[in-house]
Image (cartoon, rainbow, N blue to C red; front, side, top):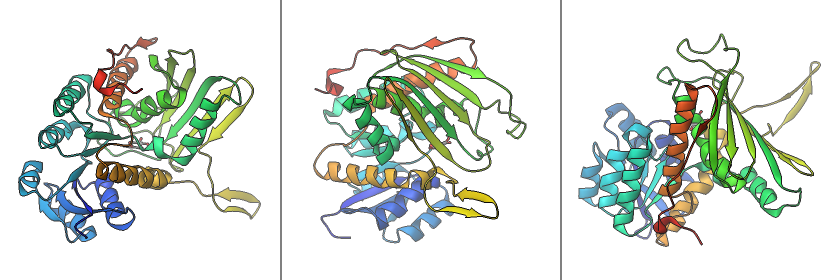
Length: 340
Ligand code: ISE
């Protein structure tokens, strides 16, 4: 590690935390992992093997007091974000916060208030789909208008399986949360309402889950969006979108790579998990964040974007238990977050 490199602390060494530690030590230029904040000894030890030079702490407060980090990646589950974000903001430490910002609009509001008090944009939220090259091309196509106006977005979000602690609400707060960020970003519009429809239950779903579900969003520019959220497909990990325009249709997220015709069948490999499907997006996201922090800013979704998604998730969770659409309204954007 050279003295000019950004010294990054990583809070939480689960799947995403470990993935980011490996990325920061192996792929990202201009940064290294200087601190690992993880109360679980086994996870901390495994993470230390990825970044042997990093100091290990049980609490973020101790890492801050030690002066061991210039910036921090927060990769704990969403329920633990607020108690980590507040001391980091207080210490004016730039943050890349894995999605979601927090679990509900009340706590997200407290975070945007705390950030505004610092007078600086310190938080970038880890909605990595915005960095995926295919999503970027689709957004460029929509903005260009070359296929006419966007009419509909039709998405599938399929996971092979989910861990035992995954709840019905997490279909929204842990999974559809990505669409709640990326859809408004793609379409240049806000979500006006969310509806959830249930069909036939997958007999292979964990017994406490009723899924797949169909999530239907109306945007305030009239664009209609549907997303199949399906977490027990077994065959692989698939996130794909079809965009319907006035004069064309575009698709992203199709399986790619080696195509094999053999034994009377055609095969192409499918991803098994999000860390490989979105590897490039995560790499680009973290590199952009490191570069922006070194230049004194952020380079992606802001805490305000995180707040808007928390409001959408609240509507989405309500829609899980409501017949018909649940409308959502956002408060006016604070001047601090207004973009020209
Ligand atoms: C997981 O937490 C993620 O963020 C993945 O991107 C998403 O596809 C998955 O459904 C979530 O559980």
